[in-house]
Length: 461
Image 1 (cartoon, rainbow, N blue to C red):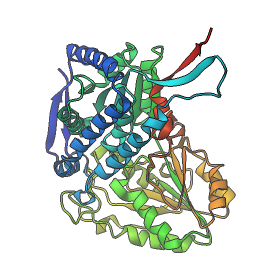
Image 2: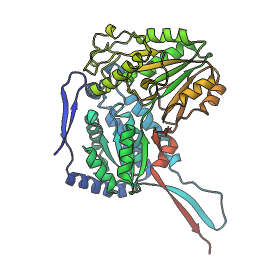
Image 3: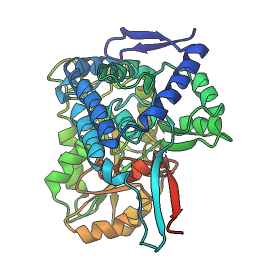
Image 4: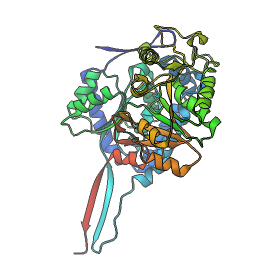
């Protein structure tokens, strides 16, 4: 059988080697999932919520081991404590709104009739999770899918394959019905065959645009519904009335946390000319304070990228920009661990950039950001929209009305004001253009994971 191998970006050690599931194992998992889902859907909602949240609690009990395990798999420093706080927030919110979100929709009364629209589970949900936030991205779909009465198959990324096993351990510990949740080690070909065969009712995929197109192609003709969160090139606009220190501090963190490997991380910044020079100086100064190194060291604030090829892409973009006239403000030589042909990459701030440069229009997903000067809101809006992606955009201002007005013209799924790189579970997580389709979290997330069923009952005849 083919194997999935996870190699640590920290030191090159082999973290895990797993055989992909056989055809028989896949068919068995699908059959058991179908059986479990039929009975699970009949379990009262409050009992489903309680059982799923016990699974989340069991996952949290492993966090001490998970933090270092995660650092070794994808490079995030242990000082940040893993992802469980966010997992708990998202799962807890979705549990808290489930009764309301899944309640029947009852129209105005009509004599002689009982009418309602109920939300019924879709059936079998396939979650294809990425490596960059391997717990958070997975929990967005796993928890509401199970609460809504679905069964779940999880395919996790090769780089964080141990995360899938942790989810399985957690749900096994709380004795969910056999087969209701299953982590499968799958190749891309296995996944495509599963989708093409119509075995899945809904797939939620987080990953690249190329990967999203492959999912869409594989599912063509199967009537499988899709939730796709794909690429991003998230912009920020700093207006002249921004709270300066707050904007600098949060935009540095928004660009470089997790080595820039964040779905909604800041990749390009447009600063009004009244603040530009001062902003650039302060931004570069704060960026230089990062400590690049082994993520198992508590002093490290910036770990390696998850794989050398990701770092190489950022290096190519940076070299291309410099060759076209950009200026790099951070000396990589001041970061001893930075080295070619490794995943260790120092952060970089580029000025004198424009949209002829790949670093300003193509996804980087790494620790580099370009900063451009703009003269007006209009110019900022035009540049922010000059992208094939649209996940989030942030506006830094003291004027809430202006931020809402500007945000209404930005082509994006989420508009932030005075914050960035955050996912609020009470709001729909969605994107436009090549960033994808569908939504997760909030009440809308439940609508994506259920099927409306209308009841038109005539009585009294």
